[in-house]
Image (cartoon, rainbow, N blue to C red; front, top):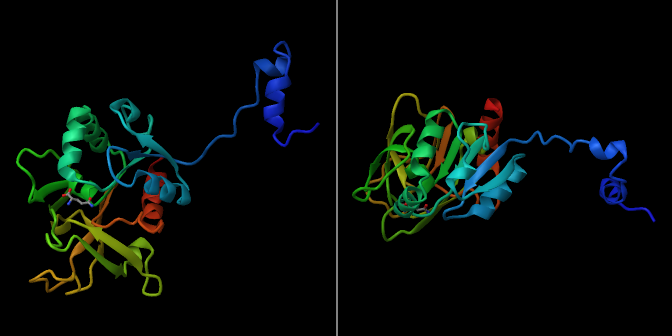
Amino acid sequence: MTSPNRSHRLAHTMDARHPRALFPAPAPADSRPTIGVLALQGDVREHCLALEAAGARPVVVRRAADLGSTPGDRLDGLVIPGGESTTMSTLLTSFAMLEPLRTLIGAGLPAYGSCAGMIMLADRVEGAQEGQAFLGGIDMTVRRNAFGRQIDSYEEDLIAPALGAGRDQPLHAVFIRAPWVEEVGQGVEILATTRAGRAAGVRGVDGGRIVAVRQGALLATSFHPEVGGDHRVHDVFVSMVTRRV
Ligand code: GLN
């Protein structure tokens, strides 16, 4: 009988005294970068699928031990999904992950934060809860719940060439109780803005709002690109990670 999986068959039939048993064929090397998805809350599965589609090997990160001690030790990059940044701060503190994460990011671990993840990566936050802890890293001021309290969700087709979204293929962006970026420092690249005046229902908006930025190895978006299975933002992040691996 032939097995469709030859190595599987060998593993079960090989005599332990056979020399090949001492030197089994090495598993094919996985050249994909390993990217963790912080799994305290949010769209963990969707981020994993988008990372896989973008050519990375996603792994779920739940505890400090999953982080490794230096960039490249266990993770080549990390995604911080959306959720609630106050809850995320509390969970990161109680799982003793806040300091290890700050250290890794400070040491250059590439990280991508979406929505609450963007808030976590901001150096300055408006509308933060008293005592709320952040990771920081991007020289920007982010305003929590900026799209307005009564407008829980907002959608716009963004034209953002830096995210692979030209005029012919805009990026459908879903904002859920999302922040926007009020201002950025000099080293921060603006990757996407909403169209001037389009942030529905937001009074006083006379220009486009900054909703995607990059600084060094850090990427952040106000919106949730994982909703709907678009992986262009993940493509950008995976190539940022690959350049560093
Ligand atoms: N409003 C949330 C916060 O402040 C973020 C919302 C989201 O991640 N979808 O943390």
